[in-house]
Every structure is written in C-alpha cells, then in structure tokens.
Length: 200
Image 1 (cartoon, rainbow, N blue to C red):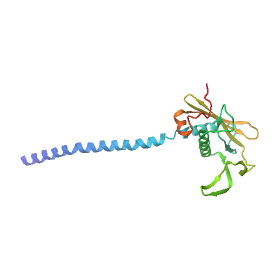
Image 2: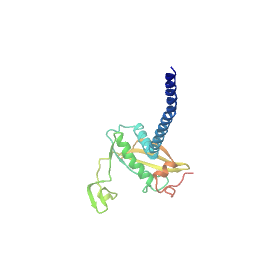
Image 3: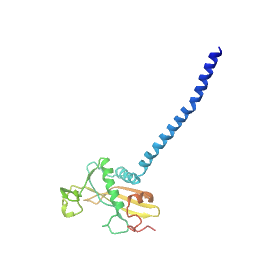
Image 4: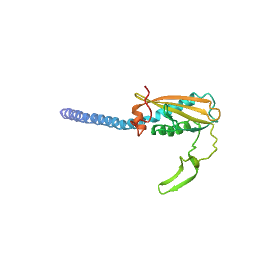
C-alpha cells in the first residue's frame, strides 16, 4: 500500500515538474510565430504607391461614361498643374507605369506606344522601348488617352487623371487621389527638388 502511494506521488510530482517547460515551449512558439508575421506585414505595407495607382484605376473604370471594353488606351505621364505640359517627374513616370498594369488587370486594352517594331541590341543591353518619336509608328489604333496633372500640397501630392477620346476630346472618365508625402518620398527619387510649384 505504501509502495503504491509512493509511486503515485512520484508520478504526480514528475508530471508537475514537466508541465511548465511544455507551457513555456508553447509560449515561445507563439512568440516566434508573431515575429515571423511582422516582416510579412511590413513587406505588404511598404510599397505605398501601388494602392494609389490602383485607386485611380478603380475610379477610372467606375466613373466611365462610355463602355471601355472596346477602347484602346494609351497612357501618358501626368504633368505639373502649373507648369509646361512637356515635362514630367519620376513620380509621374512611376504612376504611369503602374497604371499600365492596373488598367490591364481590369481588362482594359492598353497600348504601349513606346514599343518599337524591332529590338535594338547594344553592349549595354537589348531594348524594344524608345523615347525617339522617329522610331515609333506614326499611326496607332489608340482611341483614348490617359492624361492628368500633379499638384503639390502641404502634406503630399494630388493626382488628377482622366481618359479622353483622342479624336473628339470628350472626357470619358475621371479619377482623383491624394498621395501622402510618405508615399511620394518612396515614389519620387527627386522629391525635395522643386519639380512643381506648391499650391498656396
């Protein structure tokens, strides 16, 4: 009888001793899983710019006054609202590149008018894009063009975009989004240099 009581007590004592490490191991596992989640969340929230070009694309599709399924869209750079309409900024160029992807993913037909009908092979790389208008097709089946402006405000940049019928100049859709300064700094490598005049 004494022997069985002693064995039971010993088993209970050893069982109690082994419980805390198991709890600690579970707690450590939970902490590690939380730490593993943090980098993934940072990676997801880091590219601020994508959400603003996506919002512009959503608005352009939603606000369209004509059916866009047959439109052939050419995307140009947004320009400074108070400047000459022949200069763009890195911010504008990045937004334009993102809008190509965003509008295409929404099943609009986007034409890349900077693509040539040849590949230029050079020691510095192989290229099919150009900014030389003499190397581009004179006639392209573009029906609508994306144009717009950027204006600096105190805490960021206001982007206004619209789809315009290239023949009639009729505005087919409009979009507007405010890009906060934190996102602009990531988008525009020349941020801080006076590309656009600040609005009063």
